[in-house]
Length: 295
Ligand SMILES: Cc1cc2nc3c(=O)[nH]c(=O)nc-3n(C[C@H](O)[C@H](O)[C@H](O)COP(=O)(O)OP(=O)(O)OC[C@H]3O[C@@H](n4cnc5c(N)ncnc54)[C@H](O)[C@@H]3O)c2cc1C
Image (tube, rainbow, N blue to C red):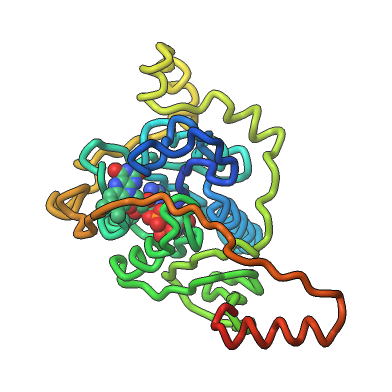
């Protein structure tokens, strides 16, 4: 990595589209039937990408900036890198290996932090607040801990960005907090943040043939000549050995979380109550809900 460039990394996950759940979305044992759900860019991570690109825009007249995407998943997660290239990212890496299988958030954040370290000097790391499949919101903060850098969570708005510091509005339950940090730092981006810019037509044409070696092999494509001429079209893949890990901290071995059982819970209403659109009835209902600790 060029030490004179400002280096931004975005952690982005490919997730099953849990917003479009059909009747075959769950297997009989209660686990997700990933094959029945389309794979999409985790929504918060697209917002993280936008914040990273906005930081790049803010610095572009001051210094060179590179936005790199890291995604950990199967080889088809290269879709995430291509989509990011179309929208303005500079490059990306797919971190993929069977030895990562069964990773809980601790092992996932360990592998991702090792991948970030492999890049060398990194000034700013963005992640989504939460992935829509795992839903824990743990990975971003855990990566910051493992990199030993400050973290700003729940980022909703980029207020300002210079080569020395970033100012961010954070969304909290009861309001908004404005915070400032120097670099390096990690920022987790809230779903209320600005939507990601659309694909850029020129970038789409330039990068549409980008693919990884695994994809080329799967689709029987001979990419060597094109990659020699246009190296940016090769989406790099890192396996476990490439990120110099402590192997005991990867996959199942590195995952202390054990799922004991999974149950389908079907919520059914036991009673219903109709109220009229009057202030007194609404107030009465609010009192009831508060005293029952429902809200
Ligand atoms: C015991 C156990 C076993 C599991 N086994 C598997 C398994 O075999 N296969 C499997 O697919 N899942 C498995 N999972 C789920 C997996 O642990 C989580 O999906 C993963 O750790 C990320 O957590 P999360 O989805 O809650 O992410 P969150 O913490 O909600 O994500 C926050 C942000 O972190 C970043 N991030 C998270 N994951 C990634 C990633 N992979 N790449 C890049 N950025 C990322 C994104 O920016 C995301 O918005 C297992 C979980 C447990 C508890």
